[in-house]
Image (cartoon, rainbow, N blue to C red; front, side, top):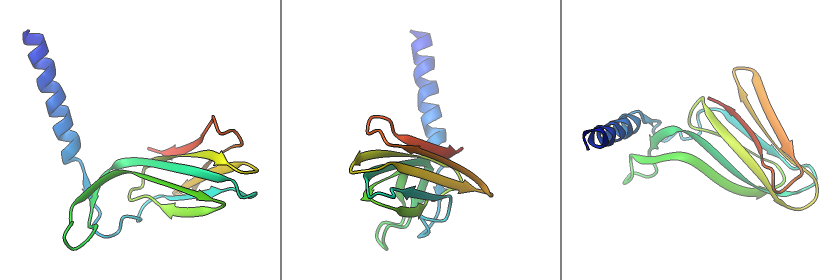
Amino acid sequence: MRGFVGLLILIVLSGASTASAQTHVGPNVEGGLHWSVAAPQGASWSLVCRFAPVTYEASQWDQRHWTNKIATTGTGAARGRLPHQDGRCTVTKTGGPGPVAIAMVKDGAVQSDATNDTAHPAAVGFL
């Protein structure tokens, strides 16, 4: 029983340290890594990016909104930025002709991956 209580306390403490490790980025939720999706033949896709937790100013009434994930869908090309200089993005082809690709850039280093298979997403990341 003592081992179980000790394990429970350890789990609670590790969760508390993660929550306190959030970075407040203010209104600039796109100040970090660049990401880019390409679908040269117009394929549709879904993108999920995960990163260290941040709080940001979503509105004047919600000054500490929390997130650690961006999810979006599209067709063709799209670009954006994460809130941090670390993160991981996965793009999944959801339909249409041709492949989809994802690329990220950090300090001049580029990571990219592509897929033409709806069952196998392409993934990149800097952690």
